[in-house]
Length: 271
Image 1 (spheres, rainbow, N blue to C red):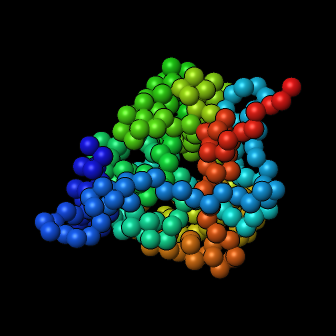
Image 2 (image 1 turned 90 degrees about the horizontal axis):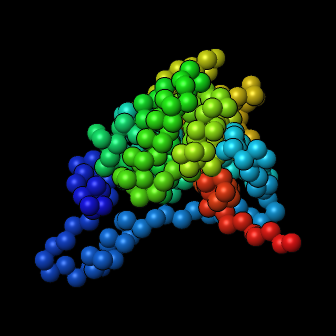
């Protein structure tokens, strides 16, 4: 079923494996492995960063940036209601780490697209079922949104999300408790936003704004973007800015411990 999710979309420019009689090239098994195999990203240099620690109260830790001395930023993309068919190819070609916060209602119509993103190396994390303002909902409604999205993403993509991003960045203590009950380990906000395909306050169309009111990039920035039409062109735009400033995109999951939904194995405590 995985192959059907990726290979039925050749017209969109996504990865396609073709088998032809008499082909003397790599075996089908080798080709499939290269297309479907999970991407791996560079890990931070030892001593260059401070690994976030779980919250003392046992609830998911709220994160909006990573403490690091490396000139790295983290690209995160939300929603999924529309997409650019060139984007996955560009992500794969450029080798860009991205974290997707998927609103799970879009799996039904665009599940193939996000399979392609998953196989380009993007984890599928939780952005609710229907994108409500979580702080306005009661506990049961919040639980339905978070647990339901995690259930759908796990069923479709084979991994249960460990990180949650509340729509609009709106949440309360109930959100954190419910998120924990749904298996969420951390809540990821952002420190800067690229208003790709729309206008931002004071920065205009396709503008970039920091949450602290400053300018440019800072090491460890978590940058918010959205799945909108024209995303490939907008990715080229922000990659140019990032590289011109002497930064590079990195995989935020490689800067988070497993206890917060990341990939870093934590050393066992010794008594």
